[in-house]
Length: 187
Length: 55
Image (tube, rainbow over all chains, first blue to last red; front, side, top):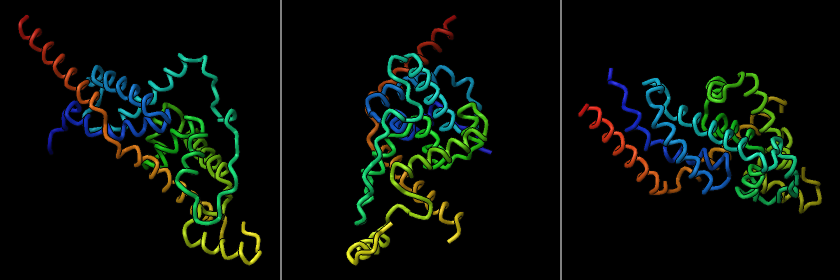
């Protein structure tokens, strides 16, 4: 068995992911960079508490998200809006011409609360299990599951997608374009 | 189409888009300040170790 690597040597490899996770929480590169900076400093002084051989990236993500939420609690003057009610603008129905573009998806994602973006990034994008995420977030597995479901539902709602109606891939879009032209109501 | 498969296909498509969102940020260059910060932390650490050694 090879000896586990020193997390100090391994840390730089996780910086792009750490930063991407920070961006998904803050939706702002400058804020994300400050968050990553704080995370690195905290991680460095706590490496003695890191269990060698465990998932360093998950450990770093945990520090980053805890820092993010504690910074946010300190800045209470910024209106708390956990359910994203403040920004409850629904989008226009997506263009039925194959342009459920990434920009629409990102706009919808931006409107979610950080709590929703967080679970979606960890479970949906990074493939962590609800059990792993529950450890990272310090909440019950059931909470992670229900939050993930609500976050996905909210995203679908913002994108006007119902069950059975997928994000438009090229083929669906083409079919819909034909249907629209022939006067059949699409969706 | 069953309800479950429709749901999971929607979920799958959402997850694919989430991955793309994540990857977009992932492929950005990491600012130099982090490399500098890590170098500083290492320097501080070895300075502390030297101090320890001198005791």
